[in-house]
Length: 146
Image 1 (cartoon, rainbow, N blue to C red):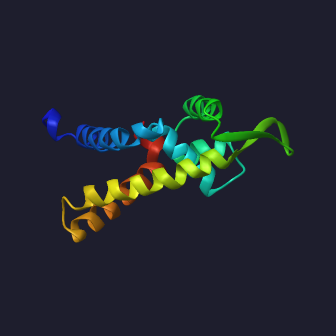
Image 2: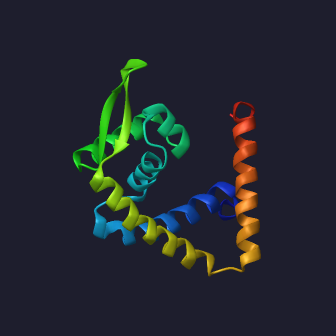
Image 3: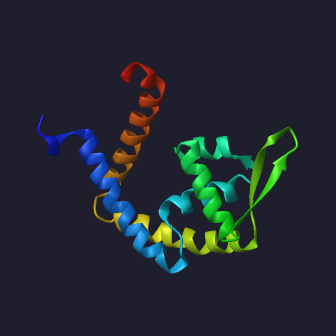
């Protein structure tokens, strides 16, 4: 198989192109797509801990911790000690974080619509279905593939 035909290369290069386009739209809000994805989950499910956030956002815990530190320094989130586990903390958006998410969520919708306009609605539905299926199977069999 040629390098350019490999699934990893195609997925990675497509992801980078889509992510870079979104990053350029987010610049005015001083937030990266990676920070946006964590803030999105914080706003959607308030009170998650770092481990849960990492799992939902498909990021490792050290990366999630770094992103949380940046969001905290930007005054977009607040951390509270987890009453069930004093070694952990729960994460909540603050007013600035919610306002930013509302604005950035609209940008994300516009970005997704622009990407979707490049193919037919049926093709986009098929792509979503295939990617979800591939991700699900990879999660099921990840220990067998390593």
